[in-house]
Image 1: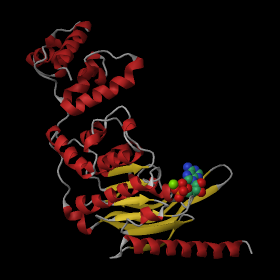
Image 2: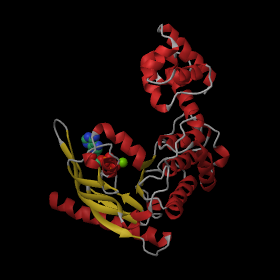
Image 3: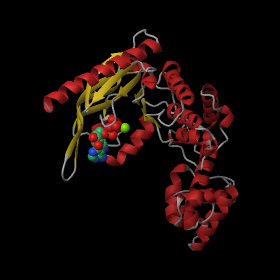
Image 4: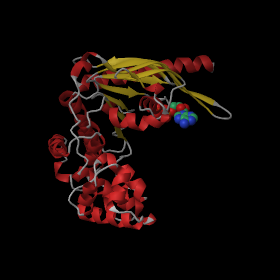
Length: 364
Ligand code: ADP
Ligand code: MG
């Protein structure tokens, strides 16, 4: 962020409009002195003045931050550059505070009689069929089920990516089904963390910047960003790769970075869809240890979809889906991962057996 360059740019655009400093000041309802300070690079406009200033000077916010007009073909490249500048230099607020723990006794997630019907021209699929369950604060819950059983659909409904045909979904008490479409992105940023199979990191930002970006969106003060990322990345064993770009690190490291990015904003719940799907078994175990650690040490609440029994054995409890319904659940209690693993296998066998019976009835 080059304050002098920005000042010169403001000055240039003002002159192009044929306005004096006083005339611009009048339009913005501020003093002439303020304009003079910006133009000589001695200060920057207040956040609240950016948009009106951009409108008056007919430039985009990116152009204002870059201090130059940006050609169409450079838009993407410049946007990332400017964004990072803003993140590291500027957008500091002091609004971040640790979440109060009155949520301890409350369910973070309450799903009540939720169904999702997909209708196409010649068929309809009841992908989720009257599902109800709750997830208490601080727990690590798995959803298991064969391919096509409705796991991703259910997760997308909870993630506000899709809307249920019926039912209510509450996250920290708020019914998310009522959130208007245009507000869902904001809701996701403020309340949810995501760890998906396809690593959803921004390729033009370093690992550090990817994590910082999440914090900036949450309006964390710039002084607290670095220490927060540093302490967390030590925990997740990614401190050595913070300055690398996502394509320079392994799949496991990328997923742990995604975990860091998810947890660092202190979301109500972290949603993970087959997070180990693209990892080898060593990296998968490391990631699962990380997720379990986030629950224990950061009091995170995690809902993880998986069809992998090994992954599921890290959870505190598991919901089993089949044909869009939750057929049964399993709690880990005090069992070891090993015993839990065996229990999960038995449960799956039982569910498949039940499915077999149903099939026989339908197809005698
Ligand atoms: P899973 O994640 O357990 O593999 P999905 O939730 O992806 O299952 O799919 C559940 C069922 O819903 C499947 O029969 C699938 O074909 C159907 N389905 C999923 N998404 C759509 C969609 N957008 N339109 C129509 N059908 C869909
Ligand atoms: Mg799926």
